[in-house]
Image: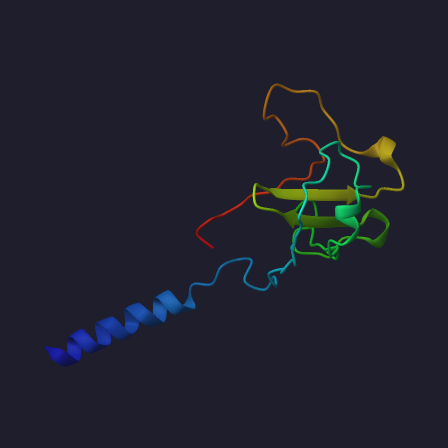
Length: 126
């Protein structure tokens, strides 16, 4: 009985271990953030002095249309993150040599799936 239970558990754990996520080969990016003593001006322009001291995150990986591939140098994205005692601030600059070709569509609220967009998702569990 113990032998049968042992092999059943062994097979179960071998099966569970063999199940690999599709994106396991993608390295997770770590981004440094800086604490600031004053909040940046929220205007979409990153010219405040507080942004100048924030580390710049680059070399992102595409999701669509080339999932898992590095972004092209011509369409780079730079992200800065700051925080203070009252909030977290994200600043992003996206570069594109042909901005007139950026996907865009006027939709109802939250209809962003057919557009070119930048988003931030905070997961408090990871």
